Length: 485
Ligand code: NAD
Image (cartoon, rainbow, N blue to C red):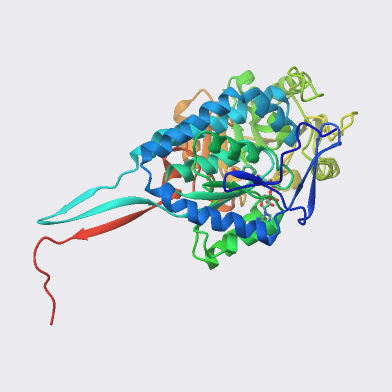
């Protein structure tokens, strides 16, 4: 019997599901059991061509609609997503393995927020009037054209919407390639947009590995590439896009610092560290995986952290009581287990976890290492799993310098009751998305993105509009033209 997660076909182009079984088969594995639940096929060159030519053509009429009309469609799509939240969340859980407890509140709902927010902004995209004596200049905010979105595997619905919603609000069309690890959810986003009234071809989904992504990025018809992925992939995609002088948004990896001062509320700080390391089993780009704890509260913090981490309910992601799910794939599990071994070998003190959980599927226990030093591998490299490194510090000046000593710059957080210090520390940290007495909140109203190797551009908020549109300026002369000859 066909599994309920099996999509009707692999791709969604020009308003309909499209199949081409000549492409490489991509098995979809449910991470909680290891069973294959679906198969999709990587896009062949013919599928890529169909998607790009359709999106190129559809964009013209879409951009000519008023912002109010485009916005209405996006907001209708948001309503449909919310009505179907339960089914979409179950699908997200099949796609990623994340517990339903999370997917019910953080995936389709976050996608719906983006559709609603950018739907609301669509009608407000105006230019300005610049008087110059009798003459004047006016500006227009125009669409970029055809945009390509490429997703990572940790938030497949959210990533499709965070890219698709602002792109469409500005009058662009999109060809979206989900991660080959989680190909299912973006197809539902495409289906819902059509149901909400989006013209066929405005939002298309094609499946495939890096090769398909590469074919999309290098196509001369593409005006912009928005990637969510790792730093090495980001460097390749950025270079390929630069060769074609395309716009980019790069949402890449991180190794973010979370700094906890002696005066912090311990339970809030522990809660922040848990949210910033163990949500989605640690598969979150902005995670605060270097937890710097001031020496005065270190042992108290570690004791409370171990106690609360022990309350994690690891198990069947479809059971709403489960609060901690598996790694997305066996491969990702093995990478993370390798980092845990490195942590042990290099002399970090294991506080809790440290093993594969005794279950089917790709579960790893939430793991905390203390006495981690700046040079240890687990403190330097992005692990993308449930492994928290706790490092000690004495002074503010010292911790800021150490926190900034990394190629990454996605996020940073600080816990303290001293607000002057909180703002000063955040001001001195090299990071794009920051938190004071909190961690990992990502409302659509707030800009999201990194500095340094963690990325270029911003998603969400009014900032995303700037990254999916461009300004045309028009000089208007009222008098005669003076010329030298
Ligand atoms: P990845 O870099 O392996 O793949 C990301 C996407 O790029 C996939 O769809 C992949 O098929 C595609 N791709 C790979 N090579 C390509 C190429 N040469 N040309 C075009 N496309 C190509 O990342 P992943 O393992 O799927 O996701 C984990 C990474 O994503 C982590 O580093 C994480 O930090 C990052 N991430 C960042 C954010 C953010 O918003 N900053 C959010 C989620 C994940």
